[in-house]
Image (cartoon, rainbow, N blue to C red; front, side):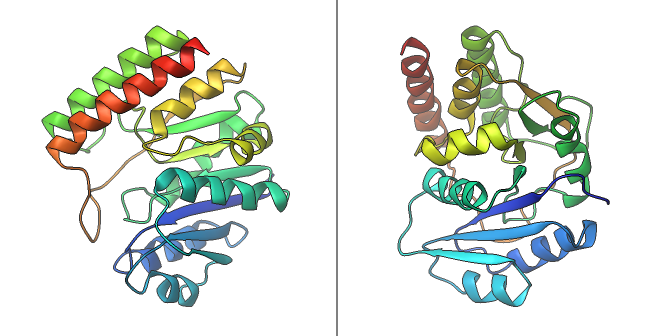
Length: 233
């Protein structure tokens, strides 16, 4: 993969010692020119040591758990201060296939959009989701369509890429709690463009998800209210 841009891969990580090394190695296999920053979000395991040993370009060790919003804003601040053209988010649990990186960043490199979302639902894939997760995605997709008039079938995907304009914006402001849906509204409200790109995803390779059915309901209510408040500002 020959990069036309200076690209940073941001990996937010919380207790991911079982999968982080393989994720970094697979990214390196795509291109040695991809820089990788791991934002360790207050892990209690050996995530930091494993990430450094696996060859991350940098490991930012947060003193305590800030949540995904705080971890990602830290990564965007790093990207902004170091002059990256594109910042790409990949989860630390092995769900995302780094070999899809060229497809995810291509629309940004061509100058067609400012932000892309790696989607499980643009095309038919092998991924199977739970009923609760599917209900949540339909709910958020409908909410985004209503607020922004834009279509996003996989708004909770954590496989996404941002250009310099979005990097600068997210370095200044990034939603704190469950940010994936809200940032799409924020992008649209600021006159920037996003697009979904088809990708393959797997089940997490190690550890366990913190999202329970009860938390899923809380997530839908909280994020729905945050989106509506953001839309009325």
